Amino acid sequence: MPSAILAGTAIASRQPLRRPFSWAVGLTALGLLALVGAAAADDTASANGPTVVPLLDAVTHGDGIPLAYPSGKPEVTARLIEIKPGVETNHHRHPVPLFAYILEGELTLHDERGGIRKVKAGDAFMESSGWHFGRNEGSETVRLLAVYLGAQGTPLSVQKPD
Figure (cartoon, rainbow, N blue to C red):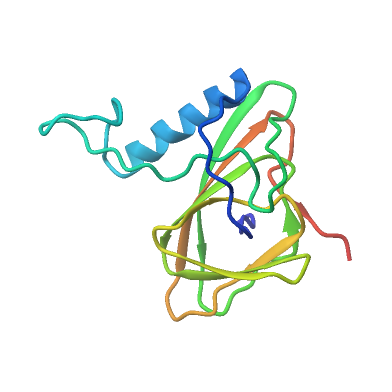
């Protein structure tokens, strides 16, 4: 199972993004809503319409680095990742933007600058672009949805060399 654990949060913004990235974000949002059984029309649904819960608007990775969609043929990849209690991911980074949503559990995140942050069920964020790892210090399995906004042929994550 690939590592896909994050550090930091992204800054919310309503600024327009480049066209290919906006398409990928739109696809990601639709897929996420399908997973939770909701259908989105707009933010002003009628009493009998769908309920829309905004999760995240981001223009940066979790460490504040501006998002840049990779060149090439766009590819969106979604993964459900489970991390058992006591398990730690390898040190890694992501060469593509990565959106993550914690479905269950709590994860302790460590970044290359020594920062530590805990994310729990219901937290949505953009992953850090720098080296990082995550550890499940809790007693229940962490389940997270990882959505990579990449390009065909670009790796989703890269393990830190020893």
